[in-house]
Amino acid sequence: MESHTSQPTVIVPHTLQQLEDEIKNELINILKNSNFGETLEKYGISGKDILKVQCLLDLTKIEVSNTVNNQQANKLLQTIKEQNTTFRTLSLGGFCNPCPVPGYPGGCWVA
Image (cartoon, rainbow, N blue to C red; front, side, top):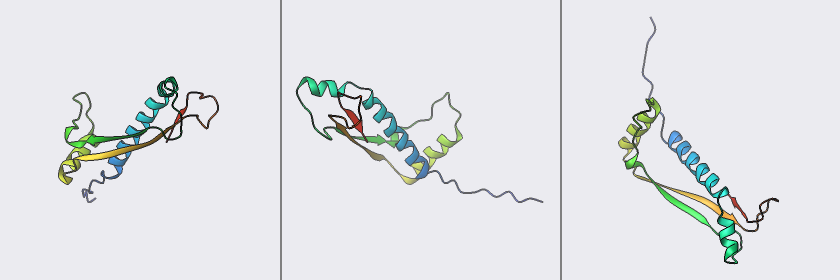
């Protein structure tokens, strides 16, 4: 007869780190596709690492969507609540003008 034992859920910090990394990647993509370089150029501003972005991820506000039946998300929320984790700070690199990569005359985001 086989023994069925429950294994502890190891979600945080790995899944929380994965969530943070994906959020950072989304923010970087937004900045890469923005007109930020053109805005700087309009005012005659250039330089390396002009912009650094920092934001707070408020874990107390996270809810699982009603349209998603996601066991992993529910486990993540439960683990966050158990650990009393509230805020995580996310920091991103900077904007570089001029860009070290050819083809981006308005500057580019370098992570």
